[in-house]
Length: 298
Ligand SMILES: *[C@@H]1O[C@H](CO)[C@@H](O)[C@H](O)[C@H]1NC(C)=O
Ligand SMILES: *[C@@H]1O[C@H](CO)[C@@H](O)[C@H](O)[C@H]1NC(C)=O
Ligand SMILES: *[C@@H]1O[C@H](CO)[C@@H](O)[C@H](O)[C@H]1NC(C)=O
Ligand SMILES: *[C@@H]1O[C@H](CO)[C@@H](O)[C@H](O)[C@H]1NC(C)=O
Ligand SMILES: *[C@@H]1O[C@H](CO)[C@@H](O)[C@H](O)[C@H]1NC(C)=O
Ligand SMILES: *[C@@H]1O[C@H](CO)[C@@H](O)[C@H](O)[C@H]1NC(C)=O
Ligand SMILES: *[C@@H]1O[C@H](CO)[C@@H](O)[C@H](O)[C@H]1NC(C)=O
Image 1 (cartoon, rainbow, N blue to C red):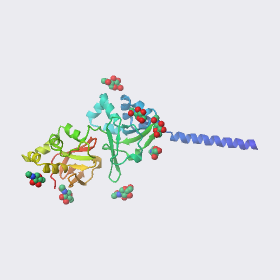
Image 2 (image 1 turned 135 degrees about the vertical axis):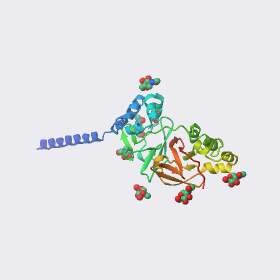
Image 3 (image 1 turned 60 degrees about the vertical axis):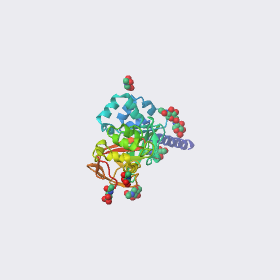
């Protein structure tokens, strides 16, 4: 009698153990490399391996990978894809910019939060449209696939490849071949003294062609009148970071205190009727978009 009971008990225990083990097996976490592959990110994994970063993503540790999907890589401009495939330094810098040496969970992803990456440059997180849209350095985060726990860290899936910032907003202006006049007016004349560090900011920067459309003598006049220059420049800068993915029709308050009107349609984005001709130049303290016309403060 006793032996039968013990046999049944033993049998039950074995079944429980097997079931428990299977449950654990189902929930078993895998490495970041395998997690990325499971989420359709084999291009990323291949590039990481070529850059010698596969070891970091596979060995024990606490890292966060902002992983673009394969589609995101295929949508990159040809010249960037070419560089990623052929230029070791570019590839390494791009991949390092997608890795943070720290575990970042969902609760830490907040509007304007920044995280330093292995490349040394920060990723900026933004939430828009009542938190239904989130971006990492302007690229959409797949909010259905964040905080995916791996054995050695966390994967957040991105629908775009982040471009490492070229520096601060001041650097971004200086290095652009189409923002030379703006650079003179905004930075060299120190209108916004801290444009390198202040922020986060969104700059709607008129191109050189936009300034060339101003009446003759207008720019010299501005250079002679600090008040007017400041008023004009402040009207092109908005506090907080508005990447293209977060833009919607409405008004934004500028540093001058006056508002500008943003219109988002299938034709693109307009600011008070001026066309936004290029978007999302990521800089360490915000973002630069380019305008084809100089705005007139109301
Ligand atoms: C680039 O990386 C590949 C793969 O890691 C390596 O075989 C090759 O020698 C590297 N080329 C240069 C120029 O360093
Ligand atoms: C990862 O972080 C956990 C918790 O902070 C810590 O216990 C563990 O040692 C870390 N692992 C590595 C490989 O650094
Ligand atoms: C990541 O952080 C750990 C612990 O803080 C450190 O030992 C390791 O060298 C770091 N790895 C990289 C690639 O920075
Ligand atoms: C914003 O999101 C919250 C929570 O999801 C919701 O309750 C609220 O109605 C939303 N507001 C608008 C204006 O859509
Ligand atoms: C990953 O782990 C964190 C912290 O333990 C948890 O809050 C989160 O829900 C987990 N993510 C998923 C997708 O289960
Ligand atoms: C400088 O510009 C301000 C603002 O536009 C204007 O009120 C002022 O008259 C100008 N000063 C001169 C000397 O033109
Ligand atoms: C912005 O739009 C509002 C409402 O249509 C209008 O009253 C205002 O004049 C516009 N502002 C500018 C600077 O165009």
